[in-house]
Image 1: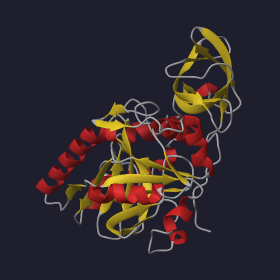
Image 2 (image 1 turned 60 degrees about the vertical axis):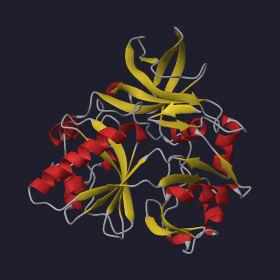
Image 3 (image 1 turned 120 degrees about the vertical axis):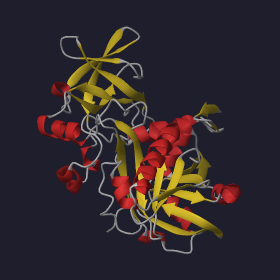
Image 4 (image 1 turned 135 degrees about the vertical axis):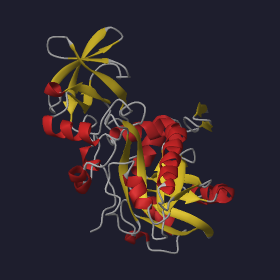
Amino acid sequence: MVPFAGWSLPVQYGRGHLESHLHTRRHCSLFDVSHMLQTRVYGRDRVRFLESLVVGDIAELRPGQGTLTLLTNERGGIVDDLIVTNTAEDHLYVVSNAGCADKDRAIMEGRAAELRAAGGDVHLEVSDNALLALQGPSMAQVLQAGLPDDLTKLTFMTSTATTVFSVPGCRVTRCGYTGEDGVEISVPAGRAVEVAERLLGCPEVWPAGLAARDSLRLEAGLCLYGNDIDESTTPVEAALLWTLGKRRRTAMDFPGAAIIMEQVKEKPRRKRVGLTSVGPPLRPPAAILGPEGTPVGTVTSGCPSPSLGKNIAMGYVQAAHSRPGTALTVEVRKKQHPAVVTKMPFVPTHYYMAK
């Protein structure tokens, strides 16, 4: 167990990191992600409120549809990455990173107060629900037994309020942090153990901890806030330009829009890239060197890939060295090892899309 943002979290369970990682890819695993902040946003101005903070087009979300978006500052930096869902129950459901919970909450409450002072109608409700992530190719087979609804109708990044194993007041969202088909289940805290035990009662399901979660998300090319993105990185530098809604780009009405859109036009000086390498595993903040041996970037995440059997990493390099296939060098313990810029995700994703 390790401390994180005021919580105590498991690094791994009895079977170990490697077995847990591969079991998730082949079967499914249960992750307790209750440390994440869950917020409900109510009021007729809830969309305007959230769009004053994030880069995404929240107004275009259909009932039950969600999106990954970015909370930005006036310098264009990423304050947090969030999942925002337009629920069918007249509120927005926002999931934030635990490490950013205090600052996110302060920013949201401050902006809500400003809007209310100007006559707007918006208010926030922080949920005390637990959050369980069931991830892997057999997720649907396992979870369907506990749902009254047909899970085939719930596609990637859609969400529904439902009962789970007869527990009311749950929300199931088809998303996750592994690259596999999966769901996150928001469940009343007092009955979270009950739901978890029902899921773990299936032989397909193993409990999984932080170590597997990190290597799975890295294989999927997904950012870890605080490592791969933070308030000093912009959406353009982080290769997250797709999170900017088309209407929002035109309106330029989100925090840091002038800086971000200038980077879109002129191209950023550095970019987030994937790397594969031989030799010892890459760990942050290993230096990335160009052909002449001069520093051109820094590793932000890295590990041996259990699925691929080779080292993978992501980091930031000067834009001139960011093209996939570019040969670079990384410095590990004062020794240099060859690396290649590699397109992400490193492992194909298996999100459940509408047919």
